[in-house]
Length: 452
Image 1 (cartoon, rainbow, N blue to C red):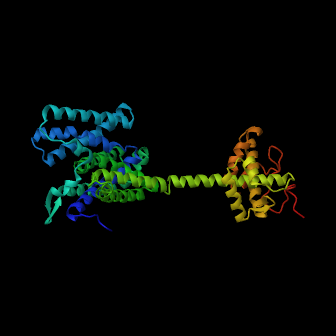
Image 2: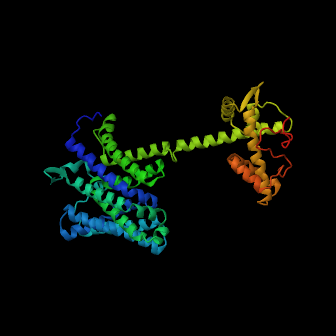
Image 3: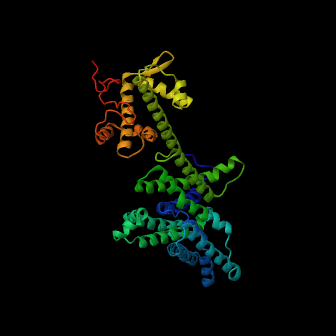
């Protein structure tokens, strides 16, 4: 891979490592926040740590990272606990509870900073987008290497989160999807919940000093949400979210030092570009996701629409033959009689000719023997449903056609046989129309009489 001009592993490499560790640590827990509909808890914690920072400065009289981290972590955990308590005790919405807690604590922190600790330098910009570009400058000795302090902290947090998810996977899964069942199994969902919230608070506090509020909130929510678009299996969701989070960090830093040059600028915020990269990956998952992506959904919807229109064409031609009006049909008649679109009508007719359900006749088309067999099954399904709705559901015969029209497209041979058994093997539907048999060797005019 070609690296940008001016790339330094001693600087850019550690920046990417720090971003990846932050992203992975947040994504591991973010999966369960998304599943529990608590996606904005990380944002709430990141905003609410200000009084902890102010209190740590007041007590210690310094801005050393350790007391600041401890003070912020305590308030972060308090934010999670208070939000959950207000939600349960006050019976209010989860989002409202978090909003009350973090705005109140944030306001208290502002008052403390202004009134008693205005000599402390807390840059709002640093809180928003961090200072990840400067993380390689603050190093500690580790096994003979000078490693950025932030990398060490985030590595420990990522390892703790990974161990927690692996050890408590069953408990996290049950309490996320069915807390009541978890309680009946003796798993103590409350304890699992508060442990998760505590780790979320610690992760947010450990991350926001270096990467800022924007990136840590994005990594709690976006990779997990993107993974949810790609799979409905929780283990794969966790794996994919971690991969997407790490990829966001790499792509974000590369973009931060290359994309601005296209527009005449030197660089931009790495943390902001990492968050933007995660959003771009989410958009890709949203469009192309095999589980619920927009493209897949559009294709499925179009296939269903075309399938229903094709069934209606076959059934309509069969009913014409049944009434002795065996003739060809044109695409114009499809649009008029069956309300098909111009494109859909042309495509379906062309496809059915290709697979052998229809054949050309003059300016139109008619059923082949293969298409007639399929049409017979559709009409049989429709009329059996009509009989069932009248006999078993007690519906009036003048109100059953729309329901049977919908159900006929999803009824297979096994279901038809069961409907026939439930309705005592009727020869005709409630309107007097004969119900075709499954046997293709019977005539339409007299379905009980073999073709001689």
